[in-house]
Image (cartoon, rainbow, N blue to C red; front, side, top):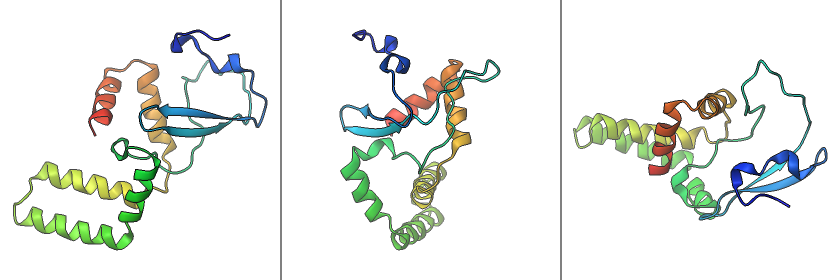
Length: 149
């Protein structure tokens, strides 16, 4: 029914109906599953670059969190009070030169994620998808950074 080559498996071959849902397993090693619902079938616009994201909910979990259970533990850990505590500790270490500028920035990026994890940035997602679609060399660099986290 379907090709053994994943590059030849296309969504259109599944013949989903409107509002039908399916599960997409993103990472087989940690069992990330995304529920996707087909809301509408559109004729492709030749003036747009695909794939394109039209909506989303919440930021994606960080790659390093190793699955849904670990993500929930981390979400519990990064309470508002804990974030404030970590921030002041990070700031103190930076002022006392116990960490360098890059470690300080990495710590701030991590805290920024946990503060804003309820937000979804469609524009940022589409910037990344555009790099993928155009085979931009930055795509490979981005993926290497994500994988190393």
